[in-house]
Amino acid sequence: MLKKLYGYFSNKKSLAQLQVIPREDHNISRRNISHSALKVIQRLNQSGYESYLVGGGVRDLQLGGRPKDFDVATSATPEQVKQIFRNSRIIGRRFKIVHVRFGREIIEVTTFRAHHDANTDKDQPSSDSARSDSGMLLRDNVYGDIVSDACRRDFTINALYYTTNNFCIHDYTNGMDDLQQQKIRMIGNPAERYKEDPVRMLRAIRFAAKLNFSIEPATEKPIAQLRSLLTNIPSARLFDESLKMFMGGYSLACLQQLDKYKLLEFLSPPAATAMVNQASARSFFERTMRNTDKRLANDLRVTPAYIYAALLWPAVCAEESHLITKGEHPARALQLAAQHVIGKQVKHTAIPKRFTQSMREIWELQFRLLNPRGQQFFTLVEHPRFRAAYDFLLMREENGENLNNMGVWWTNFQSANEEERQVMATNFTTKSKPQKTKRRRSNHQKSPAKN
Ligand code: ATP
Ligand code: MG
Image (tube, rainbow, N blue to C red; front, side, top):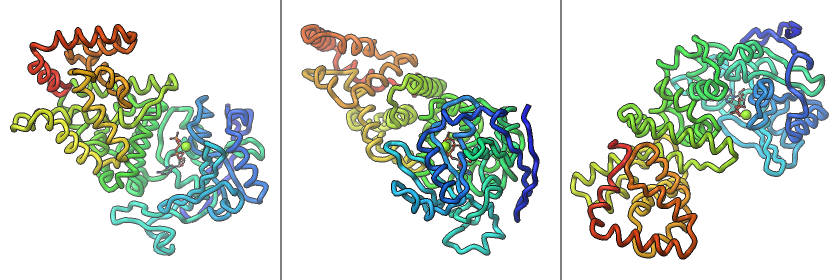
């Protein structure tokens, strides 16, 4: 049973009920908190400011998980934080935060925000606060106290504050109960909060997927109505959000949530269309996400290029076939299709060039891995994108495409010694010679889009 101490705090906008959960009634142990985060909290306290661990750090530790990062909330302004930590940098304009760096680890420090609405905004200097016509917060740098800070956070489970002064959790929004009941609940009026920041819709389904929680009805309901507000979000932010969805270790569950709430079309219209219209595309995406989650669970590297290459592959294949039907040379059709589909995609999520370049390479290597010629056998395995392209090829085969068992062939080629490789290359070339043209085309055009 939680021991609860009640107190009432009021601020201009909200009346929040504080529950203080003592150390013996929660799971958060200092041992599981990063030393850097503890250092930041303690230094801020010593300098006379309030400071707490908040957000995913508290939530995930309470659930027995390993937090992705540690966020600190403080009464110090970004400038005051910066003065305390030499190793820090103020970042962001829409939402100023301080990054305190310890080697490779970054602790995000945010100043207590005030929950401000359209009326209070009128009293604020426009450099601190701004709102669009649809109610979206364009800037949110109005500072407040811990109560107002709790109220402007997104979900109750993300608004738990852990203090190192007496190791209690301060809960202003009944977040501990929601954690226990496995509920994602928006703080305040859900529709208003989505209008302020439509990305909260993506965050709601991401946490539901990650934690296997349900979204409580009032928080869930406005999504269907308001989802189109996501078109107002800059593509750079949506790209970041897509990475959190697909590279957080629970991408399959995220994909299922995106599908359930019809939100995939705001991250990737080409993928959403393919997913709805082709069973093979759906299973290809699910396979990609399952593999990605498995790799992450095994501490293997994953890259956004591979995930986006998979998500856009059915659209690229469809476009390629379309271009060939219109008379485009097959060798050029893939290039043009890639350009077209990537062009469409980056309007929604701003995939950096280095990744789009890798995506093109993964796609182009599909053709070359199916039709190796001459010395290509030996150069292909050295190609920087070989491994990704080979994995991609295996995944296509597993998804039911008939690619003449070339996946197995490349598996064997990689494990063969020099001499065996020579024999394999010669055999392949001799065997494939008579039907070279025919096989090239049929292999190349096979795609999940057509199965
Ligand atoms: P994770 O780091 O595991 O993705 P998190 O909850 O820590 O989850 P962050 O994006 O690191 O998420 O944000 C830290 C905290 O900041 C959140 O827990 C939440 O309290 C608050 N927050 C982040 N984004 C928003 C938002 N768009 N609206 C309101 N509050 C937000
Ligand atoms: Mg976090």
